[in-house]
Image (tube, rainbow, N blue to C red; front, side, top):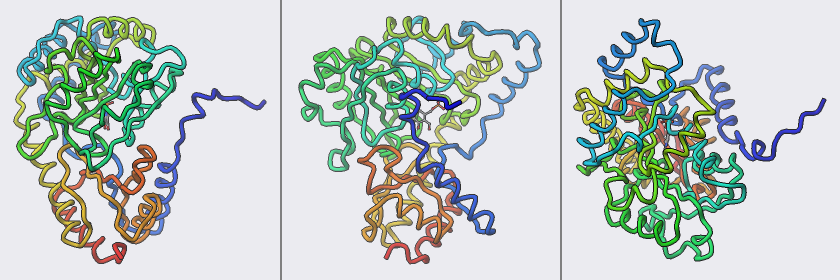
Length: 389
Ligand SMILES: Cc1ncc(COP(=O)(O)O)c(C=O)c1O
């Protein structure tokens, strides 16, 4: 029998990641050393008190039942965290947990979009921003991010007709993959734009704890009017090194949260209780390790970007996130070709910018998942490889 898959699922391509993976296996089989800068999984450990909270709770058989809802202590922990960290007051009906922001963004268009509704997403952008709404049948329109605008959207350049018909807009700073940060004025203009055109804003705040040059990571919800126009996704994955535990939150506009909860009540029965306990420990426990980790990411970013500049590759410093967005060397025209040659010549794996949209052409992304010493070694290998021309 020939099975016909849905057009929506066929639209998702594995593309370059499969090629990179095959190439990695080929190099490893040849006994070559591989430096994998392609995956955004932190190499840091979760703090002890978080692991203890989870393992204690995992010993209680009661905690293996359906959780059904966010526990009151979890909601309180989120309220306290948003108050202390961002100066934002949240009612419990403005909070819901998710199995990671990725899962949230995969489903968020279900309560908000009918087939054909327009969703604005950044190009380059994190892939689920487009694929999530696409799976709900929404139509994607991209807004371009260019280096000369610090990779921020230019609202006046979004065509009037597109703005008038758009239902949702995905925005995310500090930004993966482009590593830029947005200031207060940007968020004020974003909220004004949303109000003018009646567009719901979804702000992905995965990297508010990884922001450099002494800047303070903020919440979209801390700007006046934000809750009126949208919601924020806050993830515990990167701040607390809990990527595998799968817990994040959607927060903000109560009516969006209510509708989203209703939809998700048909998708899941609540986050595993030990994971809820771990999240409480993370949000209410000491935060110094989060700050120290941010400083370490900044040291790594400086070592990689500064190191590249010292070998004649002009890469600007990241403003935040656990990534570096590097323009490909002048002697290359294609990101994919550069990534494949880089792997072959040096064993270093990066992601071609085109994995994040066609405007990612001309860039590669490195994840800061090695310490400074290893980064210096890799910079030396790249410098000696002749790949920079
Ligand atoms: C911009 C961005 N949003 C969301 C996620 C996924 O977060 P979570 O682990 O909460 O699903 C990532 C992970 O790399 C990311 O880079």
